[in-house]
Length: 361
Image (tube, rainbow, N blue to C red):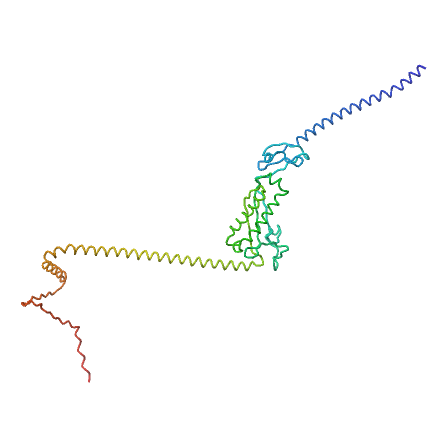
């Protein structure tokens, strides 16, 4: 009985020992698994927090949005260049703002139908017999003409807070301002001024209009440059070319006329100066001669007043001596006894005429 009991007890104890070994192995395995899970979870937590590090470049600023709201007040929310940390998405979101990068917006509302491929290749789509308002854009001028005009605006972000958070899409607001400025300004200018005579003035007026609209809307941008291109409708290109040719011919004629005018005026001025200088020189010489003659007569006056008959005789002799210097024959008429002057009569005939030849019988 005891042996049977012992045998029975031995049979019962064997399976209990196996269960204990399995339980211990399972417990060891669970402990190892939990340790690995803890390590993995720790690594995941570390990775989770490390993923929040980000770098802001030197040409940009950044804002951390926590559940959609910026972290920080006003401009204090702007993060400058360097390494920063935020909670990972979806708790935090980093919005990068390129403050120095030049942004570009184009307005083609006033331009005819075209494609980027056609622009690059230079092969335009056919103009057609007339402008199609359904697909072709255009602008109206102050003198009720139609032109094609387009503009490109270059700007950079000056106030990131306004630009990013005050508008759903601030670039769309800039686009609207440029479209408005182009069509509004075209209606203030005549067609010839836009196309030829005052292109720079038209461009400046478009840029000024954009600046005013941007300032009113407080978009937070600064305009760097505005480029404007305007052409007549392609259907009227030959007519506008003829007008341009006529204008150039007119300008050439006017320039030639002004050049000739300046040449004639310069020559006339030079001649007038020459005549004036010659007259002034002759006047000075004449006045000098008269002054010298007056001085000579003034010096002779006392001699005449002292003894007039002697002065007259001396002067007469001197004058006659000068007159008869080269005379071969000199005749003197003595004074008559009665005091009357002698009278000398000379007959000066012409060359004697030759005798006529005798008439032949």
